[in-house]
Length: 373
Image (cartoon, rainbow, N blue to C red):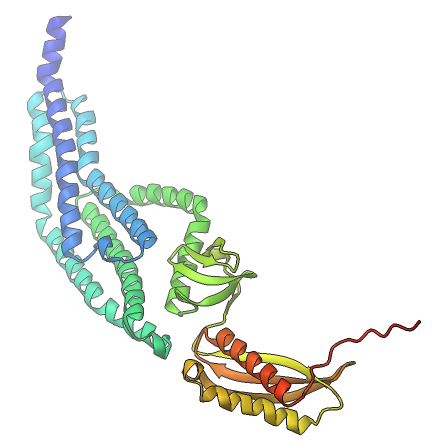
């Protein structure tokens, strides 16, 4: 029994061990080289400022590198080990593991080199042209006050994500082409990967939907950090935004997490400009023209107030006599302010109107209850 084992080990077991170690070392070395190559080509998630987006891109890059290393170095080792068990002569095992593979690569070296060169050119084009195209598109959809550091960060995040996806796509196509040149039946491989992709896709539909919707929100500049918005009937301040979710801080201080995929209707109260909208009622007995003049005068006074004038883009004034009610005449006062400053301007406006009404003996009607004995 011992002689049989020694014979088996010398004829087959030794080569199995050699090929297994070579496969493990090959996967490890190739993974390191791929990480360095991707970094040289600009696929560096550390450049993404947003934590969640950086984590997502890092996971995609790690999965891609491991998959490529296993396919290129790991799978051939496994097949080599399986083949050795059917080879009687150890020299044939050595020839299969080293000689045949070497001859196969050398005989197809020129086509493989062409594929690698074309892939490299495509990667360089994607890395150079795509960021400029993305910057041009996003700037065309940016607000005038956004054209600064914040907008550059938004462009950088979006460009890195798009560029990373394009580079992964190019490398994957190049890898499949090289495997086809080497005689590997990629049809079955692609079919297997497709089945795995479908299974993963079905299990992560919501995540994919969130990421796609997040890219559209960022690209179209629908909202940004610091905006006051209403998303799915939840109103609050946007504390953070990335490819997966929106973080809102509501008036009670609660942090609301909204997945991008469920953000069907977004109302932005601080996009480009905001509006003061005040509706009030005056008594039927008061002179309407006089009241309107007083309110318009208050708006002009606010424009002369240093503390508040910088927030006003259009002077608040009476916009329309809206309707009659049981207690008086309803009028609407409207003004335009800097984004997010409408509530502060509204507070000063109402305070000054109340003060001026008191001086001018203008009463704001309210319900009276008459008690008859």
